[in-house]
Image 1 (cartoon, helix red, strand yellow):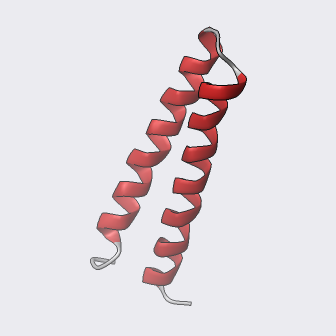
Image 2: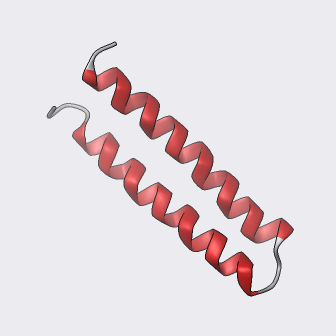
Length: 58
């Protein structure tokens, strides 16, 4: 595996984890803790976006 393949896998895993955290915040924890889960899920999306932007440059 080269560096671009590793970044592609990392991006996919980060998106899956981000979706899981957002769904936990939306469906499992409906009180204040749900906002925290959703915020961390959005943070995972931001990091996945950076990984995706680095794919061709590393």
